[in-house]
Image (cartoon, rainbow, N blue to C red):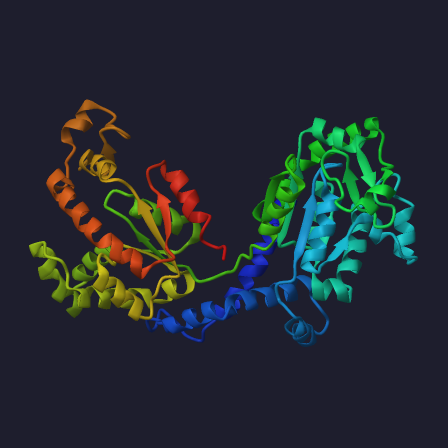
Length: 493
């Protein structure tokens, strides 16, 4: 268990080191409040600086070259820093070879198989060939792969590893050796489908391409004429291999859970390949998260902001709470804000924006990112935010009907003793004693909520025009499902 935790966390720890290097500033925040110019993060996002540094530092720490400077120069001289590093896994007869050959050709990457690792006459390969009947020891397989992936073609063009690793031990050994893929694809299919594919397997003797009488048939008649029956395992052998794979699949998926996609291979080959290609072309880039959550009252903005903040350590910035906090701190700015709060009047945009800019410029927001909700509420506020140095790079609209919003808000009440919030339908009070002392906030009354909803609907269209690329999330589902929908759109391009 300790070994798995260490290897699972290695990739993320290495990537985090890139950002730690960026954050070592020669200033003491306890002596003087630290402000990082917000345009630094904007520039870094626009030019992919964080991704570049992450890629360079990750490669440097994993490969540990003797001459780090020359190594970094060679990395920068590559045609692209986004060379593919793909593992294609799955049971026998699932179609790994066909997908891997096509994928490596399209990506211009090197296709690496166990057979190709054993082809040369080096001492290491000769030693490995002596074990092929019993299976390669994990240590020897890792040495073979390291040697191959360090060659110039794999370094410059990237690689697609087909059917490697086959066991959890091999996966952990590769991780410890620094062989860390960007994408892992697990092809899956029922055992009866796999056995049927194995029986009808046909091979082109010139190219080694695999076809099948039912699943994959060549378009070219010339290829069809020269196809030969595939010489594979007997059905008994395949059942043994399938059983072995089923025993190892949980360990493999666990080892690569953060970069893994499982694809059902029991569908047309073209569909399978397209899903694999789409996933492999998805690049996860680090961008300092600057998230804006918009939505009607009762849509769950505060709750989702809390969940995101807790998991990703971003700063939760609720405009209303921030204004109350500043008003309570006794500063000159707070004294200007306090009368508006006392009278229940909206705080002027100029004051609200000044407070937001001060908060979003602090070191925690600049380094960890932020989630803003409660602002903007209209076109002028949105324009002011866009003209500031704090433009969001992810905008989400939580969509919910007025009826559901009213039900969520007007039926909720707070226990003044414990501070817990209850809801007449979704979370009723645990006892009549608690029920009798519940209190409803004045702003949660039906008339006030209806007015707030009307104001939101009036401004929704113009807000959407300011943020045309915003993602719309159905908030009429359980909070966990809403969170998953938000989370899935945070890091992909």
